[in-house]
Image (cartoon, rainbow, N blue to C red; front, side):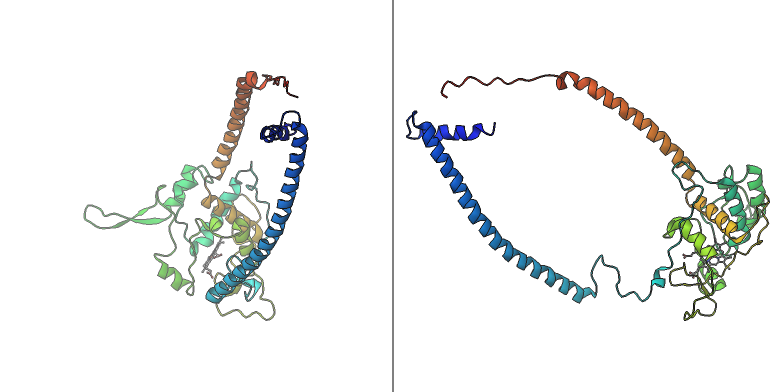
Amino acid sequence: MLSRLPLAALKSSGAVGASRSTLSAAGKRSASQVRFASTASSSSGAFQSLFTSRASLVSVTLFSAGSIAWYTHLYGSLPFIGEVHANSLADDGLHPGVYPWPHKGLFDTFDHASIRRGFQVYREVCAACHSLDRIAWRNLVGVSHTADEARLLAEDVEYTDGPDDAGEMFQRPGKLSDYLPPPYPNEEAARAGNGGALPPDLSLIIKARHGGADYVFSLLTGYVDPPAGVEIREGMNYNPYFPGGAISMARLLFDGLVEYEDGTPATTSQMAKDVVTFLNWAAEPELDERKRLGLKAVILFSALFAVSIGVKRFKWTPIKNRKIIYKPPVDNAL
Ligand code: HEC
């Protein structure tokens, strides 16, 4: 097809003035002229573009250098480039290791025995300082406890309710619908009890921290003596995983601190793993269901996709299998 194009061009150029017999010779000449003209113009164009690109290169460089200088003058640093002048790597905290959580894989669910042990650790240790606002006793039912067990746990706690007929508030034992009790009535009390630091609510802590479960596990098991040259204030503790290195929460987990009802040895790392699994469930209670639903969706949609491919091919068969043949008209002129 392409090779035919010049021929068509010849025809039209030949039509101007040239007789039919000299057409092809004239055509050849004009074709070579055209080629010459185009090479000439392209070479001069290349020269021109070289010239302009030099100039534009210089101006773009000057413009960028100017903006960078102006920006750094205004803001002191460049956007998207980390603070190059950070004082120390410890400011970001040590990066936690990567742990093989039983619920990590695409097809894995929570280890529910671990959630139950973790709840025990939370209740006996962490609940002294940390609230778990978003979890109600009823949430434990079917996850780590039976309804009766959860009801008994709830009844251990006194809740203020009311007002009654006389307009008085009264105390009553907890019900399944009650939320886990906070250790402090308000933030000020929490700070006052912890040397000014606020123990954060743990409901979403796994999602709220970079590194998630790995980070909290490393934090709980990562207390060490401060290295030489690092001063830790009175009332603070050294933990390399905590950004800055100095944390108000002291080391809490020591071997044998709790006694597990299922006989699991309560080592520091075991308790840390269990409480982190529990907190991970608290932050993502939908995890098991989400993965099951996701799997169903993948199976269903891939089946539907396969069917739709089949239907598409079926419908397109007559069109795809059609053969179109082009028979050019016989050109008597040549
Ligand atoms: C004696 C009170 C106390 C107990 C008990 C306690 N914590 Fe803390 N926790 C704190 C305080 C105070 C902070 C705030 C630390 C800070 O900001 O320096 C904190 C902070 C945290 C943080 C957030 C760290 C961060 O990155 O901001 C996590 C996670 C945490 N605690 C988990 C736990 C777990 C799990 C337990 C139970 C094993 C527990 N804590 C028991 C007082 C406590």
